[in-house]
Length: 465
Image 1 (spheres, rainbow, N blue to C red):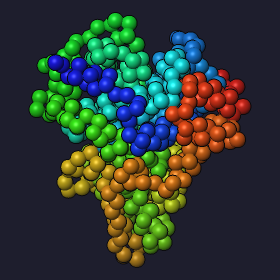
Image 2: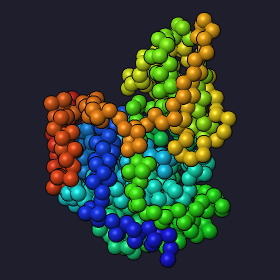
Image 3: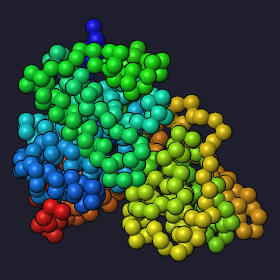
Image 4: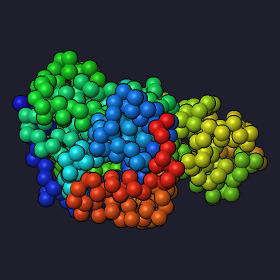
């Protein structure tokens, strides 16, 4: 039996009634958080350019572009909504895949769900199935895959979107295996493009490709049964001989579900997760010692080398670049006591006070490599004050999720802050309540119809960029 068939059997055997209540809860949390991030990112340049291209060379369709009153084909909506969901780099992360687990899956299944009239329960099952699939493959290839330079959100997320779409289409084992095999040829995404619009495009691209793979398989399209384990297949080409462990895919499948352990990590700041421990450590020192930029002589941020490879950016030139600069994020944290959307406007990058402090921030790697994906987020910040004090703080896990709970109202406040950038404020509480009761939705169109009617008037009438 091939790897694709083994995985397909597990996908086809997953049913909503078998899901633990905690898994359903955290799936809903992830859906709320992902949709919030997409609404906040809906009018960023990356998704608007993607929409412009789709509108020019494609056409309209039944699937809503979130944060607007416009609809396109399911495939176009998946790529545009996925790009919007990752445009601000505020969406959830997962240690098993070493990337963002929800943004590849949700745009695909909501768009497909609108076509099928899928219920909330069916969408939740699809989401959890996709999550488990990409995580299982992640266990086989990480951490080597991550350190090599692939962007796992895209290279593994395509399998999450494919599996979720296949489950929502209720494909049999044969067609589900073909879906995964097609997706193996559509997997892509390199870290060299971090700090540009192409990084969020990775998320939209793999969401669209996963859905496309399932739709093609449903119609009888063919692919190799050995797309994973073939000498020129996914594992050998993406990781290389000796750098993957196929047996880990089926070990303890869904026991526990990866959405529960290690689960999702909810971001508290709209920037790369690899900067968050340094941000939190800086905030600890700021509050503990009442620090201001004027009192600081030097800041040294110490994070693990694989994370520093894409966050060591001492002189960011654009807002997207700044999201991946640990130096910039640490400087903002010290200046303001938080890191917010406003700090990543292009106009903020050249502020004199910011530039003065940024020149005093250094970034260095830990002495040792992290043992696992969870350790990538460890960070230490050392500050030397102008009067000679040596201050230090360490943060091991800055992200909030099943293993590191956020305050109960944090999800709702994040959702409100994000959603009101695209939707009328009076509609946001009702949408949040609808999402909290996601399993009660009888048809995906209930959700998207309400979102469509809720867009801010100026946003609703705005033509595609």
